Length: 286
Picture 1: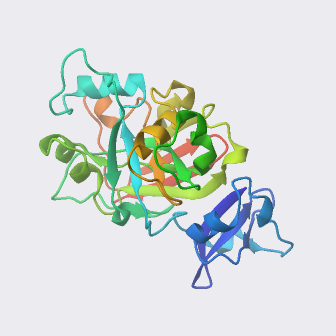
Picture 2 (picture 1 turned 135 degrees about the vertical axis):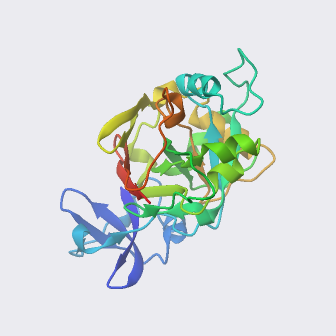
């Protein structure tokens, strides 16, 4: 099932999306964290008989519009992207021949970076001139745990959504770490909804990013260097994961810095990230 956060008649609500009918059915849950607690990962308890609201009459927000928990992100988790990043000259301290990491590179984005589908992403002119896109599959944790074994990891996954890990490449390089380049306000578009874990085979999904109608990224989650169970296990080692935590799994090749010359986002650009079984996350940049 697809769970969305939306505004209708000035009221923020959570509901189940019926794409075939083009409607969203409101739930009693006060927010998405409450929905994660109330409904199982197969969404079986979320059905209702109300007529619902037309999707065209609501404003979709990020599924977790004000994250109270962590947004973990993974860098260089597709081989071809790791190689294009190393070749780009933007990886501070890169060692020739060591493009592929032995361990996942994990960083976080602050909750203040989150915006929803169709929201405008601020290019922050004057702070950065090298803004890039990164389309990614994101995991939503539903069951808490610490020191989670790889074999048990998928039992902790409630669902999946899409994230665009927007990045200021100059700040990423100059500060020799990734928070300041990736944590700017509006730099974490998320949505359009969360699809429960039962609906997707997460290691069999196509991930595409389109910029102004041009296909830039075309990858597949089967090519993740570190699988979702491995990421859940690694991140939970000595650090408890809780419901509402997000793990963005990395981006495939085709980002702006991988081009010769690099192609950065400009005012008026539209970026759409499309993932099988989830949908499209579209944002405009200004």
